Amino acid sequence: MKCLVTGCAGFIGSHLSEALASEGHSVLGVDCFTDYYPRRIKASNLLALRKTKRFELVEADLSSAKLPPLLRDVEYVFHLAAQPGVRASWGTSFSHYVKDNVVATQRLLEAAKHSPTIKSFVFASSSSIYGDAEAFPTPESAAPRPVSPYGTTKLAGENLCHVYFRNYSVPAVALRYFTVYGPRQRPDMAFNIFISKMTRGEEIEVYGDGEQRRDFTFVADTVAATMLASQARPGSVYNVGGGSSTSLNHVISIIESIMGKKARIKLLHGALGDVRDTSANIRRIRTDLGYKPGTTLADGLKKQVAAQLE
Image 1 (cartoon, helix red, strand yellow):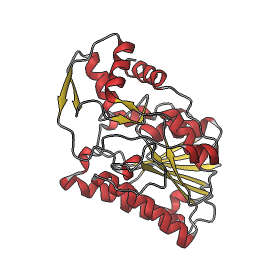
Image 2: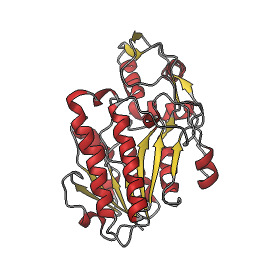
Image 3: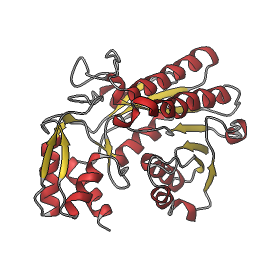
């Protein structure tokens, strides 16, 4: 089958593109290489993919490019392209989030409604849409109340998927990713920063008291869920979590054990837009699609540490 993967040079997108190509699918990857982090990092994410004939890269900005040609003969769309980051989404930066997360998504859906070949449109949303969730583990039925501009734009993307499914039968499925980690994690994300600074013997900064809990999801499990979602009933929404919630302090202790180093920690005030805890109820995706996270936090962290120290 022919797949379109947007954000193909990113952390999750590059892993997804590799998995699809390894299963024999043709992958058209699209990325606009924003300056959110250095281009050389995204280029390195694509090294293995560039060696296979099943992968083609197109550099394009979804908010302005001509999109119908990109969808020609495409059966499965995996829309992962987005401007990431909760803390960076405030102030004048918000316009970038609107352009890359809302306008780009609407334009892609608008193009998809005219496609005679698309069987599934999988949209990568975020647990950030829940904000301070009303229940833990949080089910998909919980009221969305994002507490950051980033979360607001991801919820807007979900709503656009629903609008185009309801009115034009675009076969959209939304996935709410819970804190993804693993090899190639973005340089602005906590685990990447912790490992890099501990390697250099530098102090690591922790927002809050470190007892905030997150549902950490290994990237290979996230990719597996994303591929399964291409077979889901259109209009569905699923949480994608790692199966348990863990404190940041416990994560640091695991990294210390793996690296054989003691972390030097500096506690800071909590950051605007950060929620206290996240925990995914994954019963729906397990029941409907057979998703089961296969990587423990300790094993996943070992893989990320090994990848960063190569």
